Image 1 (spheres, rainbow, N blue to C red):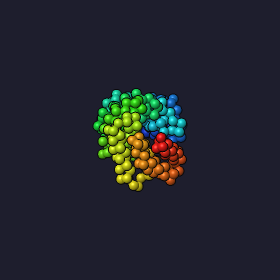
Image 2 (image 1 turned 90 degrees about the horizontal axis):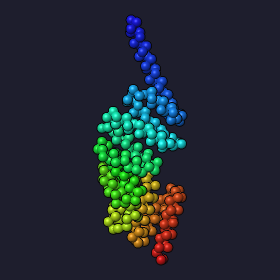
Image 3 (image 1 turned 45 degrees about the horizontal axis):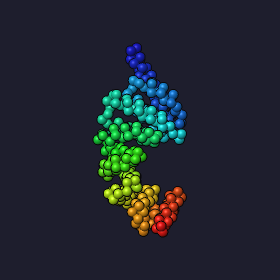
Image 4 (image 1 turned 45 degrees about the vertical axis):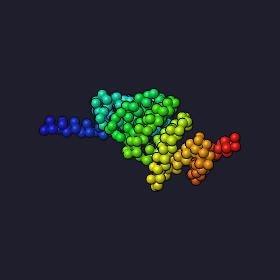
Length: 276
């Protein structure tokens, strides 16, 4: 009887402790009251609970990335701890690990650390666990190499990534990456690259048109402006004017004064170019 009583109180004690700890973490996150020192203490207390440790580092990483006073350094720190832990425990064949690699690549990219971003996007792109993440990682590699000025390399990665996102990606992701890919044409002005850019813009346009219930006004502004830029580049002024005006109209309807001004400047530039 005495032994049963001890077991009961041990179970009760463990349950209360676990509940209190969960409540404490959730409370800190909800109240926007988590500091680096608090986070480190919590992780130290979880060192013998592998499942909870992985989940908590993920939550901490997202917290510091999403909070109002964004702290990318801490988001990177806890995302790296999470990945190191998953690799140490050989938990590398699941969706969580694949997404964690991709997410850390994004944090490095947003923190302007292109080389580190490339490292993690490459790791993510080499996995076949989550097709969407693989496609996104390839496109992000395309973006990284665009920023570094390796435009042919950028196009190659974008092409591979977009082929995957056509089947496995969400429409807004496919559209955004297709528009970004087309920007390489403005850096490499040859017929093949321009033709490929127009193909990517048509892919974006078809995706927008096949999702009529979605509010893609910002992407439609970018799409039509990109068409205008392409046609201005090849001196097709009437087509360029058509797309700039279309883009400007969408911006005006949605009270986006920045893009309205940008399009008006493009139209003015087009008039000047025609007269020269």
